[in-house]
Image 1: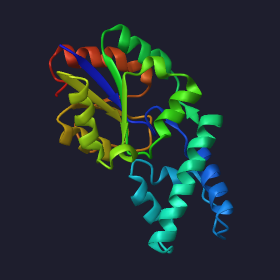
Image 2 (image 1 turned 90 degrees about the vertical axis):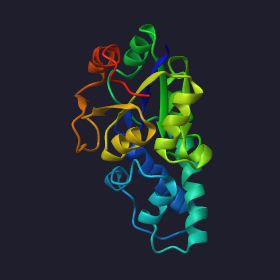
Image 3 (image 1 turned 180 degrees about the vertical axis):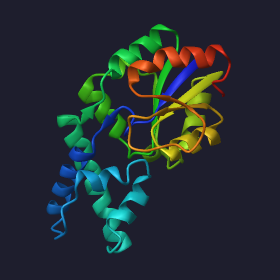
Length: 218
């Protein structure tokens, strides 16, 4: 029986908000637009949303076609910047991935990010050998719950748990029919009775307990 742990990205595996802000400001300058510089807090406040929603929040005054072109420019610049500079990786990512895989669990990543974002993360930190599958909104325009279910089915997972840091992650796990663990060290809170971890290092033992007891879902 195959079991898997599916991870959110932002606020769960790393915090790239400051680096994303730098890259988006560069893209805005290159586009010749005079605007207030974005801050890391601006980016943190919208992380977890799909890219089209983020653009609407950050650039509400721009015409839709201008906003769309700027978003494309920002995403390209962001992926290149993160691939070269990384972000703030949370402690224990590689060790946690390896421990999970050594215990027989598949390790996957599902995010609402643009195409290429997860790949930039895996490239910079050289984590490709630790991850079995990835999926994101930018690849197929599917919402997070759909993509969690897609990955669970694609990997033939009989049980799965999604690890995320915000309410939207929990709601996506419910839609996908998988278990959920709250990364309480991340960006947000979850209004539900769920298991929580304060560090990634706590995850392998908790996952083993949950899936062994048959509470993982899927």
